[in-house]
Image (cartoon, rainbow, N blue to C red; front, side):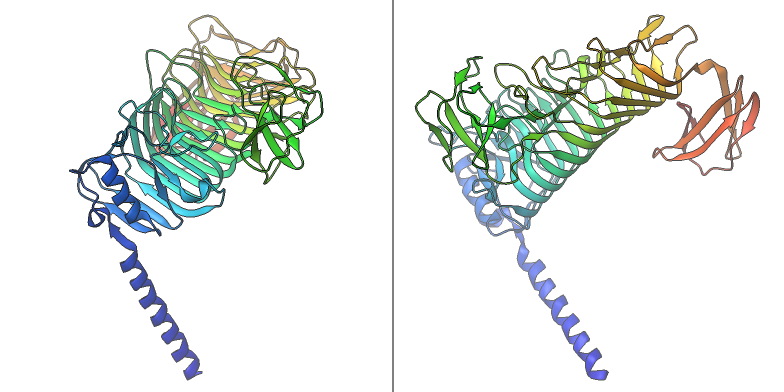
Length: 540
């Protein structure tokens, strides 16, 4: 037994010693490799690349603005830390080229996974430079910071305020387990653009972009997504769509798609996908709406090829091949919508010259299980949610809808089936500057089933219309029919009629629920904090 414990102690000592050696060896300061404020962009790229090669913790600790020209690769097991006051200044190389990517993972080019990567404190000044060609970009991957085939990625305290019109700020596709936190993005193109993958958490993000601040695009244009597949199991928490004078797109675009096996004589257009010999191929053409008749089956193993019928096929994917894709199991929490938009959340099919997401008579992709909890619609938005794809369940909770509506349509392409849609609204406050709010638009006669629990209007004369949907339960009252106050960590509630009262804490956890009659009632003793009583805040 004594020898056993001695062996354990020796093993533990050796493990600790090895970790100390590893930690000491793994910490590198980029300045020691020649990364300096005084350098040109080419020299700094070589220096930073040398520091990052092989992984480990790399620190940029001296404040200042660093010129950087060309693409920098990141390996597995890398932590890249920028201290406060460090700015990366994207610039042209001495030969006039600019970076395909500012940062990209090493495995992106041969589609092998990189794992365990952290980037913190990155602040990039784009200087009006979009995606460049210091090396051939990966078709569909166009983020300044791009990751393709990555597991366990974390990006925190990221800032860029001048994104151009042709490239995204951050793009990640084919991933497992990513976390982006404390992100500030402004500019012309998409802020955070996600392709296929599972397990994502976006938290504390504020964005002011002309196009989509957040794109959850399982499908996309051929130039905007390198692979296709399901995007699932995510949370978008405490994010703000900052106000701006002009805009395009949506606060969040949620794209699905579906395609078929290749067959001779089929009609295709730009971005169409097919399955051939167990691989996905896509048409890479001009976005001019032109249709082509496919005579030759694509079978090449990589790259692009025209077989003689005028169609350039890009071999897109030979792993995890599916015939449809979409987004599922996503929760949006504590979202502040400050920008005036036509649509905030778009559950979407493209159907235009750039791309048609749904090929006629393909299998119908159902986007599933969306929860919107704590949505504060501050700006004038026509449609809070606009859905044109099949979707099964939408839940809206603890939210404010201001002059907005939920709009449901069919895509005007034959063959797409739409299952019943279930919409649950719980503890929603409706605000409007007219006396009637048309809550639903269902001009296509979809089977929409609605439950409304404990919802309210901001004034008694506001009527909520729910035409053209099947209302299973409708509980909508005026905020004027309830009074409350707090004393000695108890909330006292007065109801003028029978109603269900729910109290949530600041995290959204329900701490009280009871059907109350007329008169005064009391909750149990509650801890100090902020609470929401049927949509109204109260402080204990």
